[in-house]
Length: 448
Picture 1 (tube, rainbow, N blue to C red):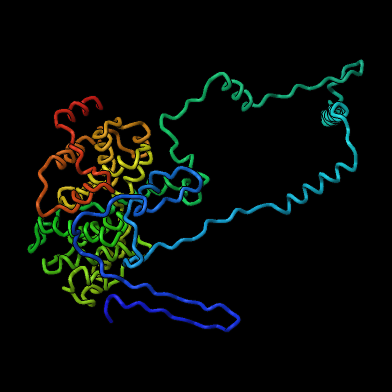
Picture 2 (tube, rainbow, N blue to C red):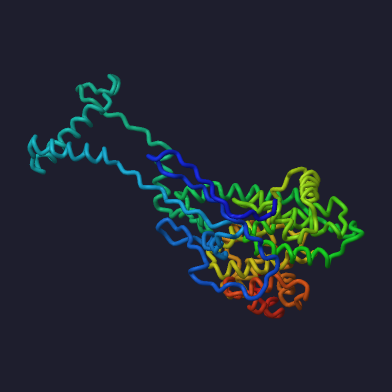
């Protein structure tokens, strides 16, 4: 059976009195493997709209919409539409209220003054009835009852003292307070989730492994990652999928010897596993065989998938820098252009072997800080320090290396990331010049 079947339609006739149901199966068109020519222009026609639920879309929602519009013939197929949840009304309760109002008109009306007087009398009677009677030992000889003094609780005393002192407000902004009522964001769990991810970083610390690979070198790894960036763009996969696939490759190579003949098979299989983990509709196996130009058999790809999962002990929920970057950009209330610039810097590090042992959270924080300085939007705020857990001095060393990476002359064999972020869809952030080294050093002295 060919990897891309022909168009077919199955027709089921129930009866003459019923509708005829059609179940169309859309064809799969082979993806273009290389990035050929200019990328499509950014317009409202090819950028999907964000779902905002009656409010301004957040930075993460806008970032999710920064993809090219899928055609119905793409491997993913066109996005399905579904109607939003209909509003639930209390129609029955409204009818009960109307009937009660009509009944109240029949009884008659009292003037406001009479009602107020009766209300005050009732409250006075209630207070008199609830007053505790003093015991006999608290009565004097004349029979006059003495009211015992009520002890003042310590909480009330503390409250009276605190009224004169303003409570100290936190130094950081509550960035998730506005999303607490949004069931799609789960803002009440966000801090626990990212704290858990930072703890998991300690389990996936990478060290240099290239000296253990007799048939590979650093240049081959960079070319493989450059090809994986192109595959992610052609399949229109999430960026989290790309980052996870690169992590899978590095962790597998750190534990297993791989020959150069199977390096591309390793990269395509890593994308397949990451797509199954992160995508709603991952590409099929035949699509990955196609992008490898049919250099491998189906059995070889499935065997490599089993080998990767067994080597990593099926623990593939590896923290990636892209997830932290989106979170930190939200905490900084950065716009989409600033986030895209930070994404560009972070994606450049995927091709560089010297960054594989950096923690994902620290790398994301450093990329965001460099983007803020390049856009002259300020430095590291107390809010960012609170949510990232990093002081600005913790990021200085990595910040210098990232700025030098932007200054370095691009490799002729590694063009995918720079070409991708030089397009208008990504605000042409690859064309933004880096910060001068001396100017950056002066800014870092001010931070300390």
